Amino acid sequence: MNPPHRPRPRLDSVNTPFWTGGAEGKLNLCKCADCGEFTHPPLPLCRHCQSENVAPHAVAGTGEIDTYTINHQPWAPGLEVPFVIARVRLDGAPGVYLTTNIVNCPVEDVDFDDKVQVVFEEQDGIFYPLFEKVG
Image 1 (cartoon, one colour):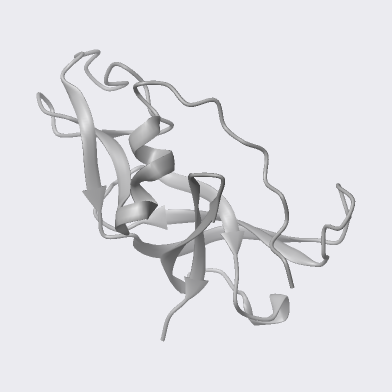
Image 2 (image 1 turned 45 degrees about the vertical axis):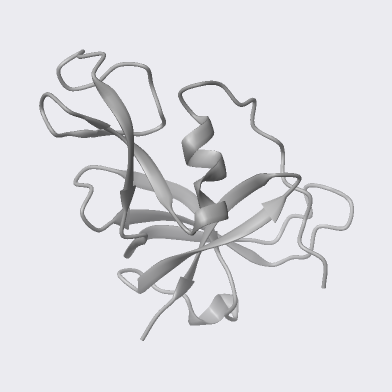
C-alpha cells in the first residue's frame, strides 16, 4: 500500500525544523528561551510572552490521543479509507496538541487516551509526523 500524497507545506525559516526534523528522528517544536513555553504551529515569536527568542527544540515524540474521528470520505483520488484523524496531546510540551493521523493499526483499535509515539512519513524531503499506538 502506497501512502497517500499529502499536501506539501510551504517551508520558511521558522517551520522548516518541524517539517524536516524527522530526517534525524526528531519532532521539533518552537520553544521560547525566555519563558520556556512551546508554541505550535511554529511562529517567529512566543505566543505566551511575545519574545522573539524562539528556537527549535526536540521533544520526546510521545503522547496520548486527546480526541479523534474516523474518516470514511475519500477526499482525494487513491486515498484509502477509513483512516483516523486525531489530536495528540504531547508529553513534555504542555498545551501543545498535534492534529495528525494514527497509523499502523486497525481504526477500530483507536481510543481516547491511547499512548502513542511519533513515526515519520517522508515525501519529497518533508517528514510528516504521524503517530502509532504503543503498549
